[in-house]
Amino acid sequence: MIPLPLSTIAEITGGIRHGPPDPVADGPVTDDPVVDDPVVEDPVVTGPVVIDSRAVEPGALFAALKGERVDGHAFAAGALAAGAAGVLAQHPVDGPCVVVDDVQEALGRLARAVLERLPDVTVVAVTGSAGKTSTKDLIGQVLSGAGPTVHPPGSFNNEIGLPLTVLRADAATRHLVLEMGARGIGHIAYLTGIARPDVGVVLNVGTAHVGEFGGRENIALAKGEMVEAVPPGGTAVLNADDPLVSAMASRTQGEVVTFGRSPGAAVRAADETLDEQGRARFTLVTPEGAAPVALRLHGSHAVPNALAAAAAARAAGLATGAIAEALSAAVPVSRWRMEVTERADGVTVVNDAYNANPDSTRAAIDVLVHLARGRRAYAVLGEMAELGDSSMAEHARIGQHVARSGIAGFVVVGANAAAMAEGAGQVASWTGECVQVDDVGAAVTVLRERLAPRDVVLVKGSRVAGLERVAEAILAEDGR
Ligand SMILES: Nc1ncnc2c1ncn2[C@@H]1O[C@H](COP(=O)(O)OP(=O)(O)OP(=O)(O)O)[C@@H](O)[C@H]1O
Ligand SMILES: [Mg+2]
Image 1: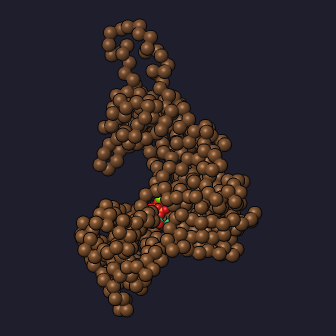
Image 2 (image 1 turned 30 degrees about the vertical axis):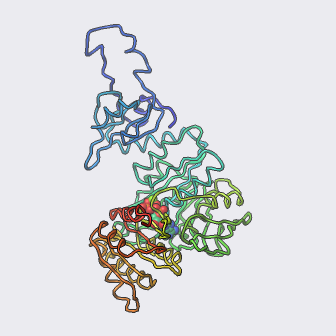
Image 3 (image 1 turned 180 degrees about the horizontal axis):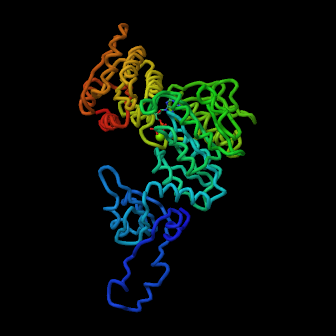
């Protein structure tokens, strides 16, 4: 973060500066000069801003959030002892702090104020139903070649994670790459109110969180708030292959740049092929030229993400050749998204267990089928959460998709995913085996009994399913 004294943080957040306890008031009267020392009175935060006291470094600001289970205020003393310059809190703590009504909102105000002090930073923001983190990671890696870029791994896309990411920027930062998520109307608008995108990317309007939104049209309304926030002179990067996204062109004051496989897209892929590992190669075509790309990421669904990243990087001023080179060098940086690992005995594990919705699950099954050509394939799938009324039907459809793909084995994990097994059972032509298990442990047992050298296993489910543990257990055996 740019260095800010606690008094300024209090001004920005509308908070009240408290502590440290005044030894003059509490103890015997002395003329100890330390009391009047402005450095002691007004510590300077140099960052980072953290919500986990274990991540405190000297000069940090510890934001004490009240969670459902834990109250961050209980860790304030520990944070200060570890070197935090101060605490952002909802009530006074024993030490230097700024007391605000709402710590989360204060983080947003602080982030906005820090960005206002960094006028040279280009803000690139990504939203969409699937692929935000993957695309943010690509954009971050491409832009890093052109100057200091803030793009932390992981999925910091909400009203807490986004300001924390913004607050990592400092005077040296040239690009800030942000992920923006939404579970309802107005969520993205809140986030763009903190960080107005110079380049706003909308990837797709799918079915993730459709239960909470109440329909895909509402998802489109919500995601479109991204391009509404792009100012004149900025760029809205829109998916030409997704009609609900390309229709957002009328909602922005920025320049519209489309990406996709459609021939009419401004930034597009030509001559797309997949290698035997399921990694895409294509010619990146932009209005300025063309250059070859060979992705290291697995799955053809990485192509639209790469095209979106290319369009965003182009809007930030990069040339086609440099973008293509950087895309070809980019690696997966956030965990459990299409991590393809080979065991000593040739068993290949595709760990895509970070989350799941119908679109990303179909994409993952397609990668499994592609990777497995000539080998036995197993899909280990857990529930896809937050699908609302369509949940049963969506799970059944995925089960049918698995069975139609003709793979050898299907392990359905957990009661909430049971409809997948029913769906698979409806495909009479399928000769593979479907096993339903209660939990991760049972899934590992089933796989242990069946896996043979060179088999391919896909592991995927929503975060609540925690199926990365299946992938980790299978890989830990390392082919004994
Ligand atoms: N363009 C895409 N279409 C379909 N699936 C995708 C696409 N890009 C990535 N995925 C898959 O979607 C899953 C989630 O990817 P990622 O974490 O990048 O998405 P996200 O939008 O950030 O998700 P979240 O809403 O949980 O933050 C992964 O399984 C990934 O392989
Ligand atoms: Mg994400």
